[in-house]
Length: 180
Image 1: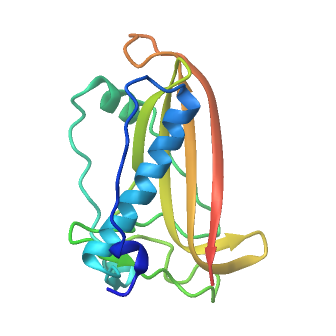
Image 2 (image 1 turned 180 degrees about the vertical axis):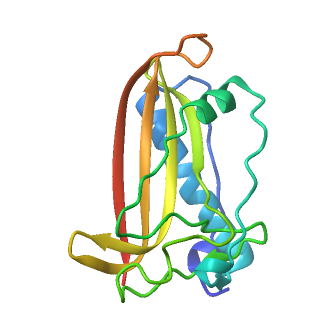
């Protein structure tokens, strides 16, 4: 592998103090970036396969309080004149190649192997946040397809996942456009 970043030795120093919540979130972002870099170093470029050949992961039976809350509040998508969501990575680590931005929603109006919702949950500033993400093989705007790959995400804010009558405090959604 010719990537200079992969050949540099990595060293870490950990402070025993508990950092404030925004710093914890930044550490998580840094950890994700570092993990992806290390995976790239170890395995090289991922294998890309056709968007309709990616086998989704089965949803496990929710066991923990966090998992039960995530399934209970999982949003449902309503897609009109656009692509439906598809899985983006399979158990072998192969990833979707997406679709060229041509012919409206051709090739992505149904996901033959099923869809995939990606999610994580954690405490942030005394609130419980559940993040959901969906992948689309074409990027759409109001005037039609604009590129390959698109992600939509939603964060739901709860009082506490342990409470029997959980209260939804807010929601935020975003669409991240992809490349051509």
